[in-house]
Image (cartoon, rainbow, N blue to C red; front, side, top):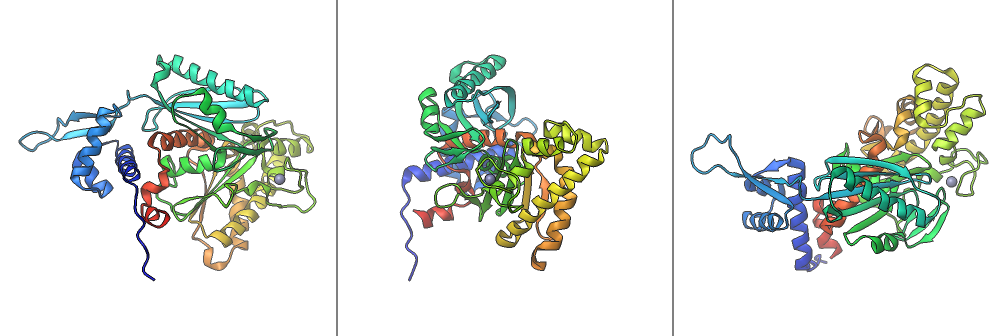
Amino acid sequence: MAPTRARLNPALIRRLNVARVFHALRLAGAASQSDLVRATGLDPATVSAVARELREDGWIAATRATNSRRSGRPPTVLTIDPAAGFLIGARLEPDVVRMLATTLAGETCAAWQGASGASVEDAVHALDAGVEELLSELGASRSAVKAIGVGVPALMSKSGRLAYGPNLQWRDVPLLERLQERWSVPVAVDNDTSAAALAEKLFGEARDARDFVVVAGHSGIGGALYLGGRLFSGSGGYAGEIGHVQVVPGGRRCGCGDRGCLEAYLAEQAVAAQLAARGRQLPCYEAVAAAARAGDTVVLALLDELGTLLGRVIADLVDVLDPELVLLAGALSHIVPWLLPAVDRVREAETLAAHRGRCRVAASGLAAEAVTMGGIGLAMEALLSLPAWLVDDEGALLSNG
Ligand SMILES: [Zn+2]
């Protein structure tokens, strides 16, 4: 049967064109309209109309090129206007909230970190306070905030409802709704590791990858699967819970209620607890990394064991999903250099021969800011009213309708 070509809603096409021009300009930094025609594959009239619209909205600025050697009128160079306002990205953790303000293009302008409190109410207040702090540092008013994105260590439904956050000890919270009540700008919220994967795709090392996995660690261990050019969210939005893969049958108790989960070994507090049992008081990944750097053999032995556990999970993921890249992100990045040798050893030994040498496992370049920059990515998607993956994959629009 011939495939039916779904009819595309004109408003969606318009949003898609805006997003394509926006992302092309963001990646180029500065571009002429003909550069944008080449980068987007759109026709010159469409690029011109979108550019005019974005200039009228104040998102992009136009300057005349001065170094053109050609005679005649120098071409107009477009940039995303650094004065167009700010995106706010947040990483919410059980004890702390970390926030960044960036330009609309995602260039960091200011950072803030504060206590998040235990309740949903406290966290919502902390996010609000963070926005105020960032704006005061930037000397900007509330109207300068154009969109807000938040990554949370929790299972998030597709509708922005927090189903369960074991480390936050929150259940069934309409988190997106609560945030939308406080801000009049576009707001988005997602699982923290999904947000980190978005950041890797938009700003990080996975920019050109279609199939990659992110494992992010801090208070928990999260996973995100980016498959076939888009985030794989599963039937309920909960896919990628790599932290709850069992690595030691009957092993350490996990926050989810099970035993032996990867998270029960590799999360920050779990690493600290295992080291405390071996006579080392190292409360955070950074302190563990410092001890490893100094050659502490007790610490190095534990990190080798943890790398072996992580390596087994990654080997299974590689066998099942065949990704081109696995990025280890979040605060976990601090200890990645001492996990990688065991990870590589195990996956070399335990993956199918066909996969060997094809998948790269690396520390995220965004490191501890991966989730916060994921908040920026979510804010950018909210601003454009379009998921970033569609920009790369408009063919999916035709099949999804
Ligand atoms: Zn678990």
